[in-house]
Image (cartoon, rainbow, N blue to C red):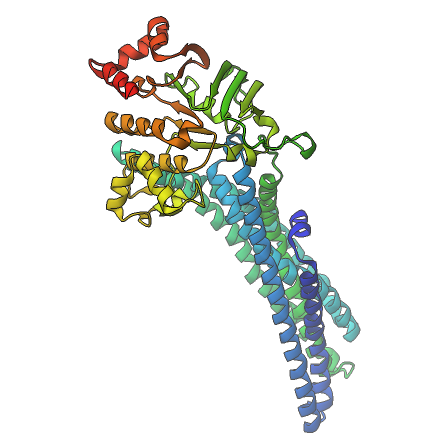
Length: 586
């Protein structure tokens, strides 16, 4: 919490909040003195002029205290909200830099909880810190001193009530604080189950597992609810107990004070002032107890937020003095020089001794069985992971020595899963090139075989719903391909992007890619499952369990490579191979 406060609070605004808080407390503490004098010098003496004058004075002090309180609340609340705003921005910025390793470590649901619920907890406590946490100790100490000065003999009551209050608050804190800390983790679990239910709703329905998922969510929900009920019941228990203790304290003060008044050793005004100070002492103690309950919960939230903000980035830029500047004008090329890659914590290499060199205008195809490492290989090109050994070069420059911004400016990729953002077709294409003209967009859509259905949908300004749910899987895939094509790049990567397309659309799209002037000057990398998709590539890499077991053209591999022959035999039916060959000739 202290670390977050130091980094994100505006100190002049915080200082003003504290200043007006002190003014408010001073006004609150001065009011009992005015009341005492009004009773003793005005009401008892039946001096109505004094009563009116002191009454107006009391109203001015009260209004001044109210104004100071309002200004304090303004600064406290605005600073707390701005801290939340900054934290959400920092987490979002940090998560965008995360590699798959960091995202997997935290988990999607936990990151969402940390950027929402946890930050709300921090915001709430920030307000309490700038209000109650500073107000309570100041008022508690000052009220005790003023009460003792007003009438020392009555302070004996506090020797009984305050220890009892401390024991009650300590007991509640002992049992409630661990429960509040556990609520954060239980919130993560609810978010995880709910998110899985939303993303996998079709699978759940297809396998008729609605009841099992409902039972699973109900168990997590009931666990969260039961914990929350226990925690908040304990906290709520404080209010009636404190009210009882305060009432008994007032009874004790009145009993002792009545004897002192009867003996003419104390005035009535002093008794009224002392009871007001007693109420302020008890109220301050109550505020402190609330803070001691909720601060540990916010501290746990702060720890979780700091874990995200302080986490090391596994894939990051080199220091400035070790980084190379991007060399503009180099011919497009892609080179893997004996590259080895291993996932974090894995014993076996995911890719072993990958070695190839592709020049501008050439197409590299990667094929292999499921889990052979095809997507892993292409994800190394934009440096989504760090390699273990070897070297990868784009346009003749080692990718590790380039900034990620410069590297990604040279690469355009369609991921295995097509991702569209809510908005319009135009806004989605502008992710690839924000300066693209309508003509550029329609050209990219033509190449991606998307122009026809885009026109039917209403053109470039047609609505795209969340995740592109108003388009079919093949349409989403082609829009993602168009977004890749529209970006000026040296390397174009299509990671199993043609799997959702039929053979005819697949062939037409690849033909359009080969004929596009911009693509001709770049390197094209295609990951595919179908032989017909890779048959016309200039170089094909065959992967099996992370190893390159074949490398060459379609005809060379078909003649000499057993693994490729098995893939061909399992896929190419009569006529398909001739169709693939004709596509290449065209």
